[in-house]
Image 1 (spheres, chains in turn cyan, green):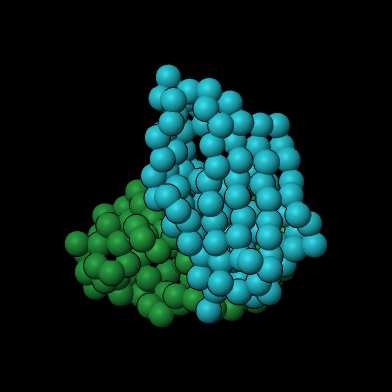
Image 2: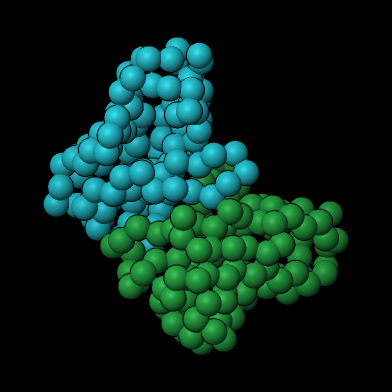
Length: 109
Length: 114
């Protein structure tokens, strides 16, 4: 069974700092990996999707990388802003989606 | 935002009572999913549907049933609610199916079983 782990569980950084969120998974037989954002009391919003054949994807200040062989992904957020405060979830897809428990990010003004 | 609504958004019920949660989409997407989100577990798939009257079980399906009589509606029923089913329930949809593409999530239903 696929296991997805996200470390750290919580992270607090000052505004303007660059940061990296980590995701690891145990089974490399995946179709893709996605990063989602979840705001309190709301659903998930997809940020980036990396197909298994790709190494990275970029959207604005966000960059996600995928190393399938080592079972790792990182989400890099450049020049963090208070509006980036949220929980970030990664999910890998095989025969279903498997989600990590998320990293709760707080960006301090 | 994808047109997905869930009802009710909040519900308190008692152990042993039946509960039905509704997911409604306006996107005409084929696939619909029900997840539960619990602290320490992330989101886990309960059931999914790949068409009208076509459903299948997910990772944590025990104690839950689903029905899909119309493309736009996917119902999740707890036949006899238990305290372990206290959770936040999310519905998701995807355009043409499979787990190779992204999913769009509803706002969630917070369920408390006393």
